[in-house]
Length: 433
Ligand SMILES: Nc1ncnc2c1ncn2[C@@H]1O[C@H](COP(=O)(O)OP(=O)(O)OP(=O)(O)O)[C@@H](O)[C@H]1O
Ligand SMILES: [Mg+2]
Image (cartoon, rainbow, N blue to C red; front, side, top):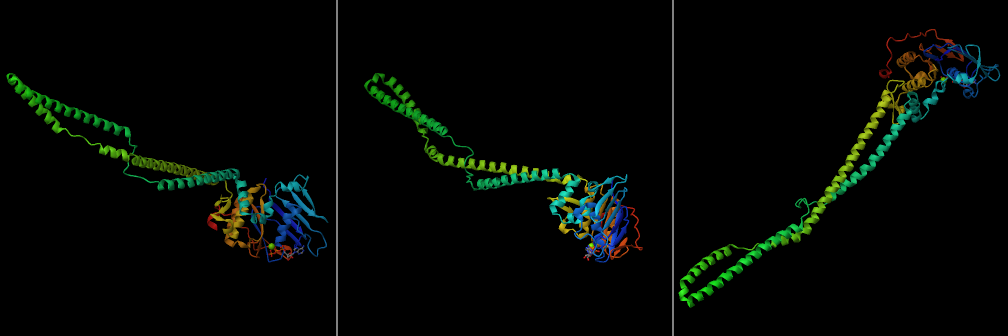
């Protein structure tokens, strides 16, 4: 059940002599007045009454008063909270007439609602954590942030190696004229042996020429010796002459092939193979570098995915105010960090967050509302109404926007104040500031 304040009756607390206020059930109730009249003393009194003795002012009793402070707050459900007597002891009576204590008050009073400065002064990280706690994604976001950091570190390490490998590959020598594969020496030896075999055959043919020639000479002698066999011998001679001519012709076309080229190649083979090895090394280095770069790129994809998950997590969360988000552990409103928000924006953001912290707490105390101009006040008031939130605020002013004026410790109803009707359409803060 959402609790708001129906009535306040305070006497002799700090600057207050006697104050009685019935705040609007929802929206803005502005306590106006000049400086030093007792406005903040009203908020301090509420904090003490509802928040317990840790909020007791150091000089709680008004100077010059003959009677101790009395405070009485009536809540929307009929609960009555009183402090009175010499020790300002607490008395809580619930709607059924049963007695209660601070514990009952703590069950519906949000600490930051009665102590807004505590939120305003908290660190940027604490503010963001408060918001994450409300929207219930703190753990998931922390997990994603951890994951993102791990992937980032991993990618960085791989990136350094990729750079080194690329540099190494670039520095390797390359011989564009060298063959793709190592040259084989056995093939060249085979070629050499074939040629030597052919040359042997040639030598044999040359020997044959010599034998025929010897026969011819022998037969010529026989012709001389045996005239009777002259004709036969002449025929043989003619035949041999013919043979000789053929053999000689054959021998004329013969020429020996040189092995000089192969010998040169054999001599060069070491140099060629050195170049081939160098080229293979370079290709390997390039492949290595490429693989490393591919791993780096894959990690970039992973990091972007985690970042998108983070964005989605917050985009889909039920945020207390349009335009409010968390980025890198910082609260952002309309893209601005806390120290870049205007004073009035800070108040609005704080109120919106505190509103969600304890749903049963239907009120919030805001001191020094003078930093809002009239237009902003109106938009803020309309938003509070739409949220069903009661805000009790002080403002150095005696203008029509104040429903109560505090003067010398006394509350005076402002006759010129008119409760503004709620606007027909829901106010949009995003455009308003
Ligand atoms: N116990 C006390 N008895 C009497 N006066 C006190 C006591 N405690 C504080 N004061 C005085 O009350 C004044 C401040 O009161 P309070 O803060 O409520 O004023 P205010 O209306 O909020 O002023 P401002 O507009 O400057 O914020 C100071 O002058 C302070 O000295
Ligand atoms: Mg003040």
